[in-house]
Length: 89
Image (cartoon, helix red, strand yellow):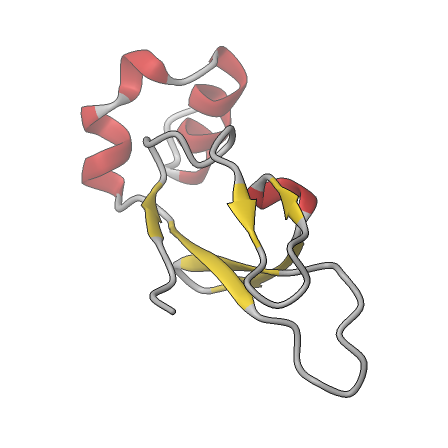
């Protein structure tokens, strides 16, 4: 099974994911998430016994350039957070 890789500015918050093993269905944020440098992944939160829970999707975090390209789509809180991180606040 191919795991979808979502762009941060796509519909990943509302897209429905389905586990191929247990047929759990939900959003990325409702799944079991693990944070890495540059991305976050989502695995099925359902019961899988001794088997590893299937990975359902990957979310890539934007680069600074991509944040800037989508600036007008961000909330004021997101803009303030980014500006602090860039040393502009």
